[in-house]
Amino acid sequence: MSDLEYEMEQEAPTREEYGLESWAALGKAERRVLGLLFHKHAGQSFSSLLPPEVWAKEGLSGAEANQAFAMLRRKRWISSVHKSWGECTYYIPQRHLIVLTLVCTDHANPMVEAMNEPVMRVICEAKPHVAAELLHLVAWIEREALPLTSKGIIHKRSVQKLSTLTILSSADFEDLNIAYEHADLYPVHVVILLDMLLCLNLVQQADNEFEIRQEQLQQWISLPWSEMHREIFQVCMDRYGGSEPIMQHFRYQLALLTRGLNEWYRISNEQDHPKIKSWLMALAGWGFGEVGETADGALAFRWLMNPAELMGIRRSTRSVEADVARHHTQVEVEEASARVYVQPDFEVMVPPDVSPGVCWGLEHYCERMIRDQMSIYRLCKERVEKAESIAGGQERQSAVQFLEKYSYGSLPEHVMGALKDWTRNWEAQMMKQTQKQTQTQTQMENQNTVSLVKEVGSNLIHKSPSFVYRSAAQGLLQGRMKTGMAAGRNADLLHMGGVQQDEPAWSLRKADVPETWHREWRKYHMSTARQIALQAIEWQVKLGVRKGENTFVLIPQHVKGHEHWTLEAWCLLDNGESVCTTEWRTFTPEGWDTMRLILPEHV
Image (cartoon, rainbow, N blue to C red):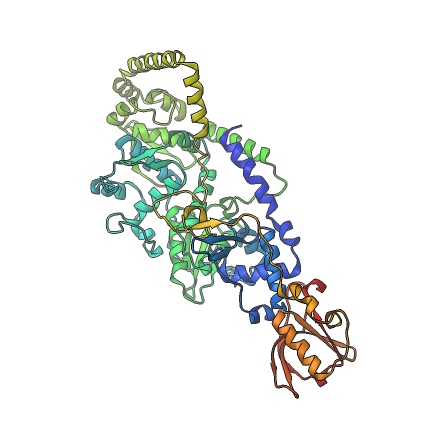
């Protein structure tokens, strides 16, 4: 099984387990508690539940909210970590944010709306997609190297080269206000590109340089552009947007509440949150979409890539095997159909549908002149000669063989002649390399069998993980945890294993009160009725009162007075499934005939 197939097989159960069906299986109180916590915190951490009055407005007593919260933890909708000083913090895991965005949008104040009118103007066009920029950057690192100083800093000359190497610029991302070390030395677009490479496991930072992870790189190059975009988009979602809950909500709504490509959506930004515009501008910089403006000055956005695919959302009927087959078929189609145009002036015109593998080869034989929808490379003697000394991510083939395979028509004769002249020593170099590999093979076969077994075992233990992005990946931007806690990266945080559900106060002390208080509807003396109301407040449970044929469910808050006392409470007017209407009222014991405590177990 390939690494790609393994990764897709591992992801499939998670996608099914935490879908809409899992949400529907939650209890009514659990859905309300989870919806409110999602609205308040999104994927950020929190240390305590919301105040009782918040739950009361949702028709929940404090005891019901706490019990629902405990069940959500047991069902893994809420996770927790202990800090080293003993404090426990909670968060909604990232895997749940998609479905919660879909089912709780009303709670989270929708900020993305379909437009009936056209945009007045496009204020930021999309740049060509960032995936090709990452290939361009990796090819440069492989060719030129990226050493570090003794302080672990990239040399100033290298930073300057990286800054001009790409079509991206600091202006695309400066309004994101990303904080990082050495901000006075590294432009923000350079940091983002390098951070992406690290998070995608394409490079790793060693003691004295950035090293390319060749195995992961070869797997990455084999992907179609669409799957590269999906992995890159997950990095962008997790690491570069604002950490505030409003920004998490906005990022997920923008990706999930839009129907597809080339449709403009109005961005509701009543609070004039500056980071909303900065995120849209960054998306345009990465090539995911374009930013516009409506006639009344509101922001608008349209996707140029399918947001559902970027989020990794699949139809439930599609199997893992079908996805693997689609991947291999797509790569074969791209390689079979996409061709470059080799011009007599040594320029190579590259249409946008040319596969990543072909672009990777061109990076080694050519200089990139123009990056656009139709990119232009120029064959270069120095590059062709140097490509013969490194693997270049390709099978060991000459520039002529490569271009004959991937270009439309025959190569111009004088271009072919020049290429053959530039690579006249290629066969000799290949022969030397073959001889060297044969010698190495022989030496390995002559090694002691025990040593060989140990070496193989070590390789298996330390085998690098797949290239697919994981939120715990280390990058240059340490600590930018945008969704969830990502606690595995912090030494002072420890994930909690099993969830131990503490017994609520009403359950532990239920035997201390007469059973009739919560089992039967009865009329009580005013002093006893007052005691029952106080008990409901202490236990944070509901209180039921009846007057004739009318039954009122109350969430009591305050008892005022003694002999002639009153009860202030939230009264449930609508006990519906998704919406519960409550009203703040004041009651007197003369206002009802019978009463009882309503414990969560009876709800």
